[in-house]
Amino acid sequence: MTAERSENNDNLCDVLSERSDEELAMLCRENKVCVSCYSELIYRFFPLIKNKAAAICPDPSAYDDFIQEGMLGLLSAVRGFKDDKSSKFSSFAYSCIVNRMKTAAAKLRGQQFAEDNSDNEEPASTLTPESIIIQREILKELENTLSPMERRCFLLHLSGLTFEEIGARLGIPEKSAKNAAGRAGAKLRGKLVGNDE
Image 1 (cartoon, rainbow, N blue to C red):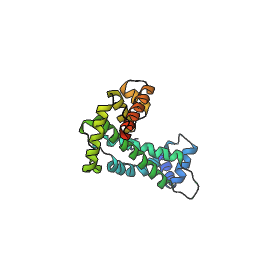
Image 2 (image 1 turned 120 degrees about the vertical axis):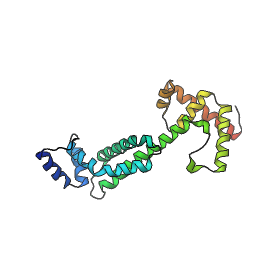
Image 3 (image 1 turned 90 degrees about the vertical axis):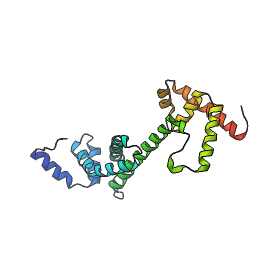
Image 4 (image 1 turned 135 degrees about the vertical axis):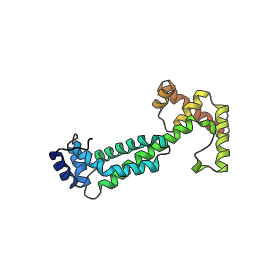
């Protein structure tokens, strides 16, 4: 957007700035190409999106991606908001924005863990001596019990990727990724209950 506005646009912005969040959301839903209404909502919620991105983003290099996730959360809020007079759009939008960013953060942490599983450590916030020992034992079992493909598919699935995403990442069919992760789960369950295959 440019900083320059015509006189008509200034008048429109003045009119929209007097509307409530709920009214703007409903105008956006009624007229899916109402750029001015979307712009006004973005103007109102962008400070929140920036603050939440800074607070939730686990990797500073992904900050812009989290801004984008927040914007997508705001658009989801516009699409999903039900104006029943008992709920506020701002509360609904806040939840959509934060949940979208938290999901992205969990996925990012999971991908980083799966890609760098040589550290054999959990994120620092959940580390305890017991969890480190248990995790190392489980990873030893993974290495000793599973084939390399089973291990990779299983870890990527645990990180939150779908079988379709795993297949695309590893260059294998979705069904192969699902089967490998299933075999891995069955083998590990067998180890845990003492029924080694």
